[in-house]
Amino acid sequence: MKDLLSRLRALVGDAHVLTHEDPATDLSAWEQDWRKRAHGRSLAVVRPGSTVEVAEVVKACVAARVSIVPQGGNTGLVVGSVPDDTGTQVVLSLRRMNVVRELDAANLTFTVEAGCVLQDLQEVAERADLLFPLSLAAEGSCTIGGNLSTNAGGTQVVRYGNTRDLCLGLEVVTAQGEIWHGLGGLRKDNTGYDLRNLFVGSEGTLGIITAATLKLYPRPAARLTAWTAVPSLDAAVTLLGLAHQQLGAGLTGFEVMGQFALSLVDKHFSQLRVPLWRDAPYCVLLENSDSESDAHARQQFERLLETALEREVLSDAVVAESLAQAKQLWHMRESIPLAQAEEGLNIKHDISVPVSRIPAFCQETDALLQREIPGVRLVNFGHLGDGNLHYNVQAPEGADGPLFLNSYEEKLNSLVFDAVKRYHGSISAEHGIGSLKVGKLPHYKDPVALALMRQIKQSLDPLNLLNPGRVIEP
Image 1 (tube, one colour):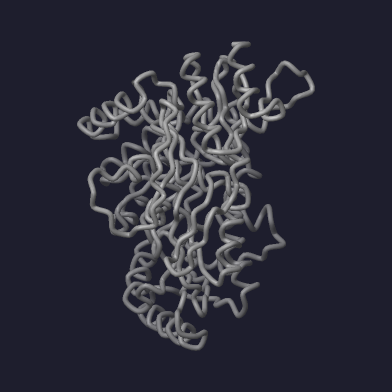
Image 2: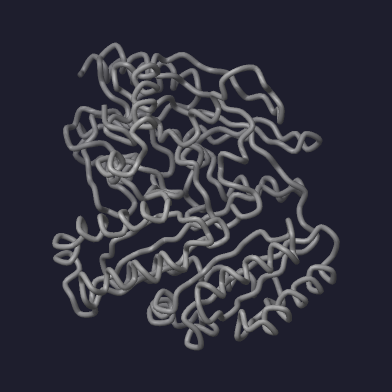
C-alpha cells in the first residue's frame, strides 16, 4: 500500500493525498455519511484537480487492486459515498474540480466540472439571466457530480424533470482509467446506445463522472408561490390536476406536507410561523412560473385558487406577495427534515407511487403501521407533483429513538416497501440505492432487470473496484 500512496502523491501532490498517518488529520468529513449513520476508514482521501489526474489515479488503484469510492459533496442519504471500515479503500473526492468550462447562451447550455456546488451553478446561470432549475435542500453543499450520479430530483421535477433530464453530455473516467469525451451539447444524437443515461444514476459504480453539459432555460418573467390547506390527499391530487389544466407548463412546483410534519417545524422552529397547518390534515405548496408578466401569473393563480375553493378542493390559501415571502414559504417546507432530526432518530423512506394511487397507498399504509406498531408518528411530505413521497416514520412520543430504530427499522422497511410494491411503486425515487438498500433491491426489482444490471456492471467494471457494495451486489 505504501507504493500506491507514493504513486498517488506523485500524481496529485502530497497536499491532496490525506491519510491517517498523521494523527492530526481529521478525515471524518469524507469518511462519515451526512446522517452520521455510517463511519468508515479509508486508506486515503485523494483529491485530483483534473480529469487526467482522475484517470491516472484510477489506473494506479486498478494496478494495486484497490477499490475506489467516488465522492462529491457527501450529502447522500443512502450511505453510497463513504468507505467501508477496512482501511483499504481510496476515497476519490472531486471537490477540487469546480470549474465552469463554458457557458453557451445561444445553445442554452453550460459545461461544468463534477465538483461544482449546485447553488454556485444556479448563481452562474442567474448572472447570465438564465435558469438552471435543479433545486434541492442540500444545494448549498451538494455537487453536480453527485446529483448526476444519483439522478437527484428536487422541487421542480414536475416541470423540468430529474437531473437526468437536464443532462446533454458527460465526461467519464471508466473503471480502466480511460476517458470518455461525451460533452456534446446536442439535443439530438441518435448514434447508438445512450451511454450518458447509463452513467447517470449509477452512483459511481460504472464510471466516474468528471464533467457534464447541462441544459439552461430562459428565466421566467414572474414566479408566484402559494401555500394552501387541503382537506385530504384526494383533494391534493385533484388540486394538482386543476393546476396542470390551468397553469400548464407554468406549474414548476407542487409539494405536499402532512400536518404532523408541519407541527414539527412549528415546534422546533417556531420563528418560521408556519401558516394554516392547524386547519387541515395536509398543506400544499405550489409554484407558478410565467414567461409573460407578474400580472399574468397572478391572474392565472387567482383563477386556479378560486376554482379550487368553489369545488372545496382547498379550504384556505396564502399567496406570497414578494420574493422574500416566497423564499420563506419554501424554507418552511425544506425545514421539515431538520425539524424531524430535532425530534429524534427516525426511519426515512424515499418512495414513489403513481400520483393517482397515493391517497389509497397512504390510507392503507398509515393504518397498517399504526396497527403493527401502535403510536408511531408519520412524517409524510414530498413532491406530490411527480409521485415522490418522503414517507418517514418517527418513534412514538417519549420512546427511545435508538432503541426504536434497532427494534423496528427492518420491520417498518418491509411493511412500507411491500406496500409500495403492491401499488406498483419504487422503493427509491430520488435518493438512490447506495449500500443502505442494496440488500432490499432483489426483493423489489424485476429479476430480469437485476440480471441485466449485473451484466452491465461485470462488463464495465469486471474487477468490481468502483464503489463496490453499492446499487447491486455481484
